[in-house]
Amino acid sequence: MCNTQNAKNIRMPGAVTIDPLHLVAVAGGTHGNEMSGVALVKYWLKDPSALVRDTFTAVPLLANPKATEKGVRYYQRDLNRCFTRDILFSSESQDEPYEVKRAREINQVFGPRGSINAYDVILDLHNSTSNMGACLIVSEAQRPLEMHACRYIQTHLPSLNPLIYVYAEPGCELYDLCSVSKAGIGFELGPQPHGVVRGDTLQNMKTLVKVTLDFINLLNQGIEFPAFEVDVYQRVGHVNFPLTPDGELSAAIHPSLQDGDFSLLHPGDPVFLTLDDKIIPYTGDKPVYVVFINEAAYYEKNVAFILAEKVNVSVPALSSRGGKGPL
Image (cartoon, rainbow, N blue to C red; front, side):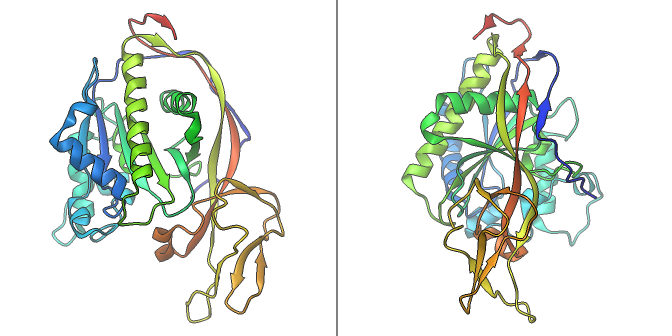
């Protein structure tokens, strides 16, 4: 059971000092039809020079080769939902889905999850059909390393207006590829149709990876990053599409809501327009932010959009051992 109670402010005490980060991976093709990450990782597997820094070299990972080959989100099961402890640490069986086996393979190479041998950081590259812009996805807000990396990206790429989305509701188990490593960030860029490469989106993703690797390199070199405050969007639930009694879609996202990702939805605002032109309003009891509006991949789950609350996070200063001093 997930606890969806959510504080509006998070305060993390004390400065944080960590070991240098030497094991870094960049994954693409976790969903085989999200083409920016697929294209970049395939390129970096042939020429990894863009992933080389003074203190480490990031490893490119084509996460789901079968799905990538077929140009589909997944082959048998969504790989990015297969990194739960029950799956990763259960016994293998002959008839289990390909993605379950692949999750265990990734866990063995880049984990094992929760171990001291796990990779320090995984960056996972995704595209969305929703108007998410350059979205930075983390599992929880109380992680100074991820928060500092996101802040560095926001500071150095203001034209992209990167926003931070916390995907795991409080109390829920993590299930994404990044959870295999000690830290991780997902890049969710959109809108981009599945199976398509947009040049502008591809360049933005390449730039996000570059800036993040630069941040890790500076941290390894001993630069101290000062404390700061930042807003994040914490997932608290979702809204389903209306269906007919026989399970068919009976309404579409209302035009006034479409493409309004990260906007504030108020009680009574239009959210759906039925096929016979009736407006269905939002019936929640308080304003809430909306993300992943009309995401194509969520139709199979009947999810119309995700609900989130804005949370202010106070992040302590961060440095690595043997540091040179403040940035």
